[in-house]
Length: 139
Image (cartoon, rainbow, N blue to C red; front, side, top):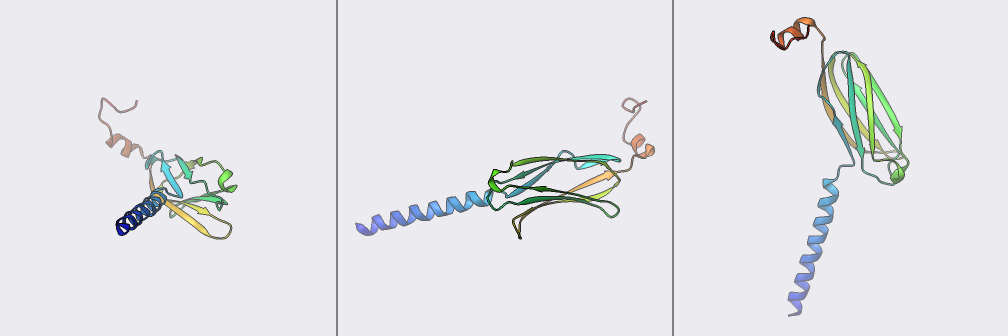
């Protein structure tokens, strides 16, 4: 009888540990959402960075990197007291294939990274003309 009680208690404890660790893993420390992933040059790159509030958070660094262009921003954070969402807008982004990288940093260590890709295409009139027919082309 006492063995059944101990076994049940162990099963409940194991389930609680698993549930807590699974919920922690399902929450990303930092995430990145892009309004668009394919744009026409010169582009306006709009993104939203979401940070899980923690006392160890000290900064978020955002980078947009291509073969011919690089832009970055750094936002200081005040730990768990900082806002959880940030809106970043980069204007006049030239043509290229971009790797967007967001780093969440603590005092001296990298805590989490989020990555996405963006393509900014040429504003070539021939490319635009190929993408429409007579009824939908701008005049």
